[in-house]
Image (cartoon, rainbow, N blue to C red; front, side, top):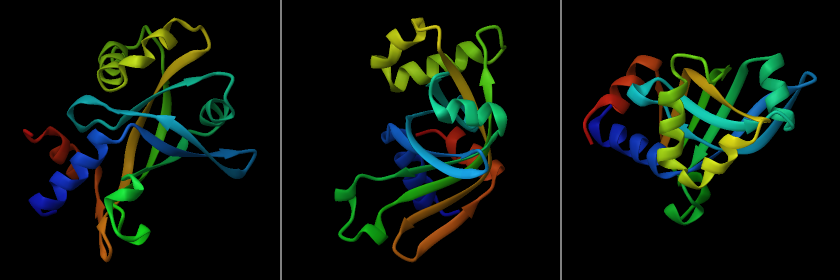
Length: 159
């Protein structure tokens, strides 16, 4: 991956606050919107979701998920040229007693400080999404596959 592409991917993921989350719901695809943050050191993503939401029950039943993070519509002249990252991963619940909980919570609140009150709601919990693969479209006709190792390298690089 070229350095310009790596910077564009990192910028997209650091500057966008919401993603489309795809889960399997009773064997059928389901898509919802979730705020997200990046886990430190390129370890993947963190989301904070309610047990009352269908997507939470879906992740508990089947950890295979997809995330789509897309630049805002005004970032390109054509929708086909919008930068976007399509992630395939595995989600797992991260309970407060887990070793990585504090770090994941801090990363989430650093990006989404307005969400702090939701941590006091008993039905909300963190889920960690471990990256299996990522497809990055940097613009029209500029797409590349990113491995988990490449992703970690990009996210660990100094800004």
